[in-house]
Image 1 (cartoon, rainbow, N blue to C red):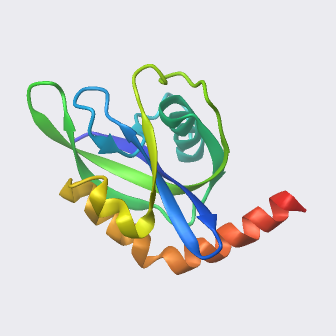
Image 2 (image 1 turned 180 degrees about the vertical axis):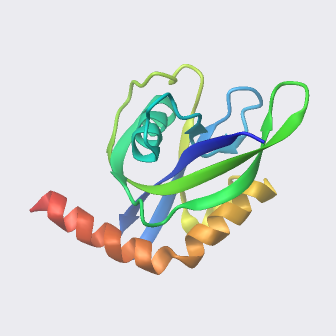
Length: 150
């Protein structure tokens, strides 16, 4: 089983959290950005790179909240299980042109409506973990946004 890293891109408005999904390359289903670490790359570096390549976003990675789950990944013929460690990424910048913009679409969803975006149990379980720690994520995100605006 291979191990990948990924991000849960999110933003806040007041006490509301929204999560950004991107389409997969093969089937067009809504997923979260993930990928392999490159040689000598830290989780933080790899996550930030994947977030920009796949979703065209930059932001602050919340490294205190890693969530490791098994995600099904299609290789075109079969679905293989991969272990992915996801980190919440507070989006501070979203660009219109990014490396994979010709391959992917992106979509923001309120956290409480994510089940309408993806029906995949693996991603719903991950979002359930994210939702369970949402009060702490929200508190930190409000603090980080206040620092950025100061």
